[in-house]
Image 1: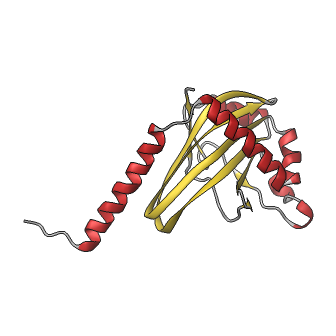
Image 2: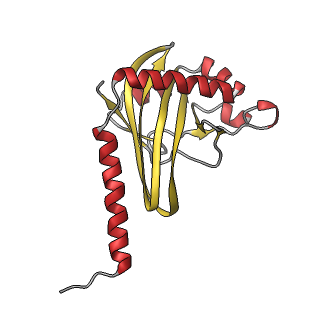
Image 3: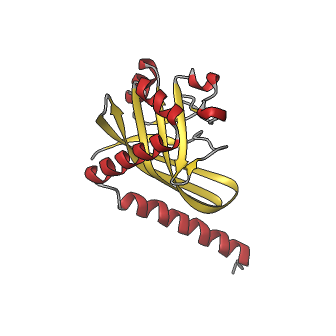
Length: 186
C-alpha cells in the first residue's frame, strides 16, 4: 500500500479546493441583469480612477468589461470572471475570462478588468473568434498611469489596451497573458 506524505495530501487538498472554487463560480453564473449592473458600476469606478483611461475609452471601438474577476492560488492558481462587450454604449455580447497558473503564489483577490479595442481590426478579430486568448490571439498592452494622469504614449498607440483595478485604484505589474476569453449565452 502506498503511503501519502503530508505534502502530497496538502497539494491534493489545495487542487481540490481550487477546482471546487472554479466549478462553483461557473455554476453560480450571473444573470444578464446582474452582469449589466456590475458592468455599469465597474465603468463608474474606472472613470473615477483614471481620467486618461476615460479619454481613451471614448475613442475605443469596443470596451470589454469584467467587473468581478476572482483569482486565487496556493502554488496552483485559477481565475474566473464574467463580463460584457459594449460598442457605442450598448451591450453586444457576454463573455467569461478564465486562466490557470502555477508557481510562487498564495492568496486570493477580486479585481475588475477593462479592455479597450482601439481599432476595428482588433475588435473584429476578437468578435469573430470562438475563444480569444490574450497574448496569442491579441497582445494586450497593460496601461500604467504616470505623473499627471498620463498614459505612456507607446501604450496609448496600441490596438488593445487593458486596465486592471480594484475598489482601491489601479493595480500595477499585472498582466492578462494566457487569459482565455470565451462568449457565453445570457
